[in-house]
Every structure is written in C-alpha cells, then in structure tokens.
Image 1: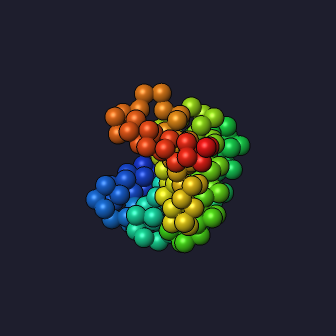
Image 2: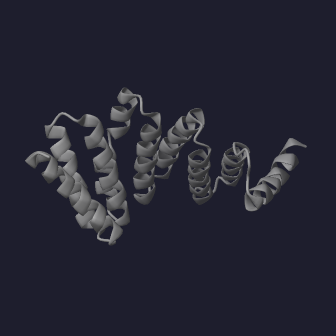
Length: 181
C-alpha cells in the first residue's frame, strides 16, 4: 500500500470513527480531507461520496448551511457517472439541509426529484422515506391534502406493507374517498 493510500485510509477511517462516536464536526472534517484528497487524484466520484458523508455529519452537527455547501453539485457528479441511487441520496441530503434552514419549498422540490429517482430505480423503501419527508414538510406548510397524498403515494409503491403501513394506507383512503365524492 502506498503512502497516499495510507493517508486516505486514515482520513476515511478516522472520519467514520468520529461519526460512530458522535463527534460529528470532527467526522465532517475528516470526510472533507478525504474528499479533497480524492479530488486531487482525479477521483470525482469518490470525492462526491465523501462530500455526501461530510454533509450528513454536518447535518448531525446542526450545521445545515455547511451541509448544503458540502453536498451541492454532487448529484450531478453521480448523474454523469450513471449512479442514480447516489444521485437520489445526494438530492435527499441537499433537501434535508434546505429543510433545516427553513427553505421548505426548495426542500420539497429536491425531495420530489429524489423520490422520482428512487421510484424509477425500484428503491421502494427509499421512495417511501422520501415521500414521508415530503408529507411532513407539506404538513408544516399547512398543505394537509398534499401531505396526505404524498404519504399515500409512498405507501402505494410497497409490495408487501407491514401491518402499520397497511393500516395507514387504509386510513389515508378515507379523505381521498371524500374528495372523490
């Protein structure tokens, strides 16, 4: 193993260790160093992955503006590489940062993009989680009908919902039936 690989492993491993220990700022710093290292080596995809990890750590550290700065543009790197799952995750991370900053409509827009990517990729659980985030945001903006429909759309994609999800799906059909009458 070369000295550069040792250095990189050290950055990544220490960042992961800090994250596991709940030291999110130190984790973010480590992921940032790893991203810079990968970028210097021309590894744009791996650098984008580290920036996404950095964003998550910064969100946990309650620094949404820095989290947004870290993740911005990574969705395009993943799109260009054809990695739709990571593109969706990057958009969801970006949306979460926007949500934490109080930019609800921008967050909803990014969550919707991520949801479509997850749906088209067959990632049903991630689609459901994203639709739940959209639903919660719509509730906060007092768009109750939109919140209910978002939640229902997410649940409708599940092939084998658990008991709680089946119950929720049944309850969500009540307002839809009233609207359709």
